[in-house]
Every structure is written in C-alpha cells, then in structure tokens.
Amino acid sequence: MKATLKRAPRPSISEYLAEAIFSGHYRPGDFVPRELDLCEQFRLNRSAVRSDLRQLVDAGIIERISGHGSKVREYADWRILDPTVTEWMTRYAAPNPMIQREILSFRLDVEPYVAMTAARRATARDLVALEEAFEGMKRHLQHGDSEEERRLHSDHDVAFHAAIFKATHNIVWSQLSHILRPSIYLLISMSNVSTEEPEESLERHRLLMEHIRARQPQEAFRAAQAVLDGTAKALGIEAGDSALGKHLALG
Image (tube, helix red, strand yellow):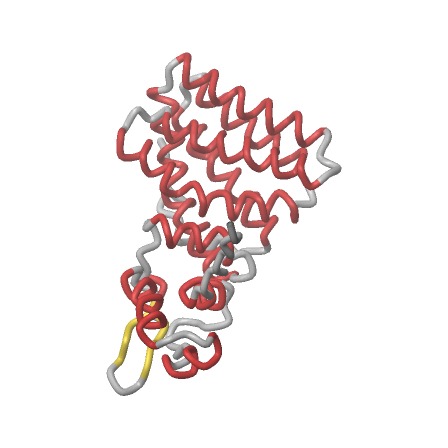
C-alpha cells in the first residue's frame, strides 16, 4: 500500500494577525492588510481569508468597514474573556505595554477585594491550597537557576492567586479565576523574570497568606495591593490611580 501523505495545515490568517495586533504592531485605529493582499501573501483563496478574519471580528478585535478594509478596534471592545482571545493574549501580548497596563489595572481594581473576602470566608481546605502554592513558589525560587524552575515558580504563583479567588466561595469569582488565568499568568511570568527583588516579592505573598489565615480582611486588602504594586514595579508600569481601592480608608 502506498503511504498517505499528510497535507500540511494551511496558514492561519487569524493567528498571524492576532500576533501582530497583540504584540502592538497594529494598534487600535490601524488598518490591517487587505483581503487581496493576504490572499497573495499566503496563497489562500478569498473564502479562507474571510473565514479567518471573521474570527477576529467575532472576538471584537477588528471591524470590517465597507470599501476600506479591516480596522483594529479599541481595547475596550475586545472580548477579552473569550477563551480564544485570552489564549492569544498569553502567547502574543508580552511585548505590548498597553495590554499589560490594562490587565494590571483590572487586577488592582479587583484582587484586593477578593483577598478581603477570602480572609472572611476561607476554610481550612482553602488555607492548605494556599500554603501548598506558596511552598511551591518558595521551593522553585530557591532553585530558580533554570528556565524550567522559573516556569514552575510562575505556575505556583498563579495557583496561589487562583486559590484566593476560590477561597471567596463565590461561584462567579471562582469561575472568573479560571477565565483570567492566562492573563494573570502573562503578568506573573514576566514580572518574575524581570524583578530585582524576588525574595521581597515572596515575602509580600507570605504576608498576604498570613492575613487571610488570621482572618484580617483589611490587612489582606492592603497586602494584595502591595503584591500587585510589586508586579507593577517589576514590569516598569505606573500603577496610577485607577485602582478602585487605592486610596480607600478601611476603617
């Protein structure tokens, strides 16, 4: 019998443009290449190109303008919680400071409140999950002289934050932690590489864990802010005044 040759997968226009857009090559307001130009560049028929462009339209990332082409929409229009979009963000957004700033701003708005709620509601099982994640961070930081160790450190760091969301015992927050996981991982993995004070970052996480364990909501709120301020510093991002609780007086 003759061996059946596997046909190579056709180029993905949606992946090509997603990488270019998320990395900042095309910004909101910019037009991406025209259909005909993409057909010629990738040697694809028009229906295949249109199908791939439709993915980006459905994700809210581009809009088709009759007679003009396809334009990148404003960040606020992107369906950022769509699984495909978050996956693209994880793979391609690392060079884009605007997207990093938007994700960080959201986390500064949300996570201190999540930590405060966790401090009120965490069970013994939640605290075990939090401690296991922290110990994983600590272990892989101490031996973090390889890319694999750094990856494992970041994995445990993400698990630490996910455990706090879960400890709220609110089904929306718990589910949201899964949806947000790729975007949280993006910032954590980058900040863990660029930080000049990894031990101080670990200590900030420990204090957050201890305040949740001691059922100290206000202290947990501030400790979560401190963790995220450290992330902002490591990434060289100005946290600004957008955080909802940044100047909140917690009685």
